[in-house]
Length: 579
Image (cartoon, rainbow, N blue to C red; front, side):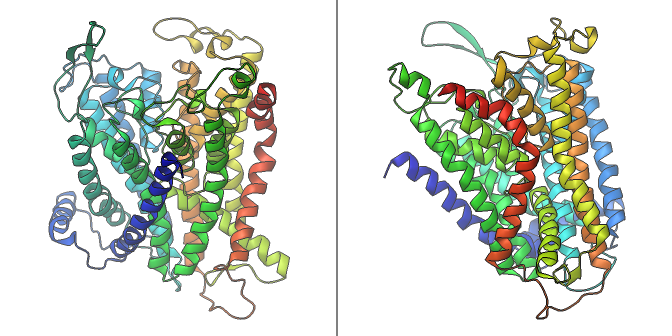
């Protein structure tokens, strides 16, 4: 068997083997059981609660959870904006990075706040060390902790009892950061340092290249940034080239490590739900549904990339290694193709190759991973997105077999269904409406003055593209899909650093982050208040392969109906023109 293929299989299997014990550990953390981190993290948490005067034992309703979540997120946004707009005079700026423009700062602050990390700036030249650490890396921790805490609230609500009290948000949030994210990040950062990733506050270093040219090489506290970038499914690179950069991703071992840790918690959260609710079979059903979808996207992508470009083959041009345009020789086609689907399905958004250079089939699969947005998904919120499809599948399945729709002993009624449908349809609404607006402007070559003006030049709509026709449309579709899926990767042929893209993308980022959290938490809170009904012969069982197939079918039907016309105008049309 091909050694590159073996490497991909080894990464997937290793992630699964690590996710099972981690899922059990996460369930214990959220249940308040004794865990090994109590001895050194417990006193730190008590000190934090004492200084902040927060009573971590006071239980909250689902509305109080959401109010707390939104309030602290607003505070974090203001802090990030302050850092980005004033980084020119703040400390830890040895390379004298200037402050960001207001529209770019708005986009960057929102993007990191919502766990998307869309970067319209180039990492090492667009943010100082102070901003990278105390604003952006801070947001990478707390945005991941926010998603995990929201998932913990849903876990609590699905217990087999009737209640309005669903634990304490601050407790879930802090433990997500201190007990889960921080210990793993320390280990991963140390491993990166030993493999050559910088960890310093010194400025650029002057080096002489092999050609004899003198160049300035950026460095910084990269190792710590990379660890949470992937573990928290954030994806924002310390360097503009992200994980294609040899200092951010030095070798094949670090490439494997980064792939494993970005998939690790999304895997583990599914198993954590099974351990927390004592429904391990249900967790395996959910994981298998996600994995089937994941593999259906990975396999065609790997095949497309290793076979290369058919247009070049038709011209008799040899392509050893497959389609290597935009890829690192260190990782080749297999690992890069696997990464491209992992990072889009899991909503990490980091890249170890340029997605704009992938084959049309691969681009379509990356788009589909973000459009469905619940095959694993991001930390915490991936499960919340999947939960919406479960509610829809339970209701449809109940109607099909003539039974009362119930999930884990709670009736699914009109109110829960309305919320679920709004959340399920709002995702394609955001993507398609904003893509339509940008397509109209591009088609009419609209010049809107300041709207397309940045520090260097004026852009009219046509100036957005490095690639015309179908691929140009795909670039716009990808941008808004990435924003709505909280992903952050991009088809980088799009000139997106101007007020139009910064502001419209920021709007999509805001709505697509908080509504998919508010909806599932509200549904779970409403279900928790209902009377628990033990399973009987008339209950639609949800821990079976049949129900798993129903959930999968609901996902595919909604995605196909909503997104097929747009995909036909972009990557599918490009595919046929290539052949």
